[in-house]
Length: 418
Image 1 (tube, rainbow, N blue to C red):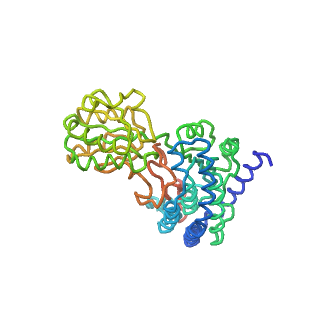
Image 2: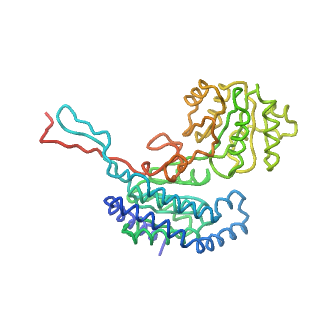
Image 3: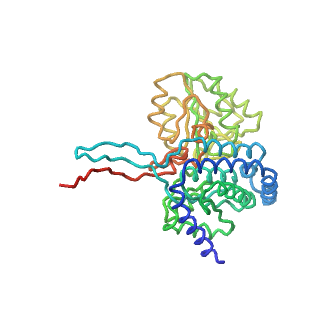
């Protein structure tokens, strides 16, 4: 079968499945999610076996440490996938909710009915755990989903989708509601992005180049974020012990993800005290520091930061550090170089927190908290389908409700337009 015919068959059957998903009862969806969770757990050894094939092939191709980390499915991550599916099952079902119902002077009642979007296309790289998250969230929101993972995770994804789809169908979910593009031919992505008659929304998850390619070629609405150039600003009124703990976590806990800190901004009043001890802790775990001239005056061994460094999402054990004179200067820096993903302030001054929250135009703004907390699961969404830095439809971590839209519903008693 040609790629065009293969993708066309996938999208047509997904559209048909989405029409059946609209009326699927909450209890059926929740039971499907619970069976999916059990299926992942019961098949953990098979999943690890197939994932091992992918990891070994990726290692031989010379993929970076960050990419290998995203690709690997440890016991902990497999357990995490199952737990997230259970958490999604426990969430309220947004589909069918009537919102903002009001009675108008004519006597009609007008409101918004929450409904599924339809068919969601997910295009992603490396992370096979996204397969379970995306399938679970789309199912809960009453959507059909077409998954197209990266070639580096093909064996993991084929294995997972078979487990998830069989488990969900056994509970009464529409057949073909969870589908995977199983070819690694890149032309399949191009064909997906042309299918505006069948796919209602595309969500890319991966590197900047992947997302740019999807946006440039898609005829379908795209929700995305390009990168995560995340900042922490340590204020002159910060608790420096807290700041050190937060900055270390934000950079080290998992450096290859989009909510890891990439630039540390330090107020000049505390820089001579804070920077040496912070850099000493970073040095113990091998973080390379690239600093501004004032940072290098305090720590002469630090590499010189270039203009490009301030724009860079390293996804690695590299950190840019800049000394600033004020909160206002920190906000200006974030506005110029940031990616509107996640930015944080550490301070004990309430008024400064409010200024930071108001003036930093990012999808998540943190006060005295690590940027690593920018996550759908942490926010109580059960899991996330992705993070949007756009301002229309959804922003920040996207959960179940963000995979629905609404239709206007009007109840009358014979009213007409005069």
